Length: 196
Image 1 (tube, helix red, strand yellow):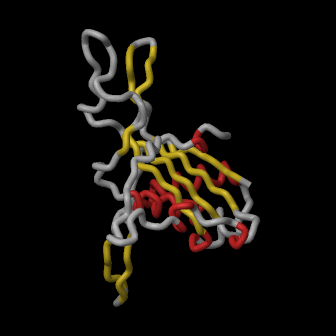
Image 2 (cartoon, one colour):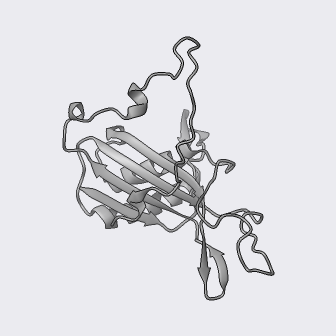
């Protein structure tokens, strides 16, 4: 079974906890901003999944959309067309690490009771992009920041799945040990975003 929901907020990473001494013991307190974000994720996940608790191996996909910078969102005055590609753009310069975005989402899903424990997650696929530009009746605008989350439970034992091609491929030149890097033209827009 596959479950998908959207978090209508800008992606947030898991913020570092603050160590506090309480009653002679040291506890780590998660910042309020992170707790609020994870609580929102938990509410949205409960609405998408319901009371079901997944107990097998789980796959997780995350599409984290950040707002464009002012430069990326510029539109030519004469033509009204975007200065940069209107398509999704990689957010590789965004300060929030992708693993912290995933961790925050996973903690929200744990809080929702979607699974027994987040160690069940056996596969993660995450994308960090800047919003696409869409043409409206009033001109070009960027899509609002958000995250799309897809959760799926594997029913077939892992031994029946073949490893991806990159796991079993050999380096291009065995004598030098150098791997040949080729541009495979990967689009940052995965097909699963369009499926409901």
